[in-house]
Length: 137
Image (cartoon, rainbow, N blue to C red; front, side, top):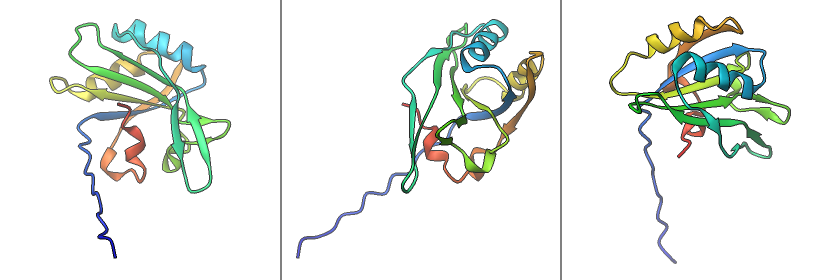
């Protein structure tokens, strides 16, 4: 009988995640964030999410801050064909921030200054059930 090998991958979730409630279309929100943060979010390939029998595609915008020190990813949580993070059903978008030199709360404060955003707050990534879907690279 052949030996069975199990590959156990342990991801490093070394990023901050901001939950955003906003009724704007994703391209408009990306533009507003670019304008406020001085970033360069651009449309990327949709993020494919597979549950047991369902599959959904979520809009993804990636880019960097104006100083190039951080990487950003704007992900649409709710699409017509499914929700990416079921435990965050009330959230429209998530902004993933990979920045070792800055406080994520600074980004939240700037996002809250955008009038079209109804709410923005930090999420504890470790508490998310499907956090592996946030790996965009």
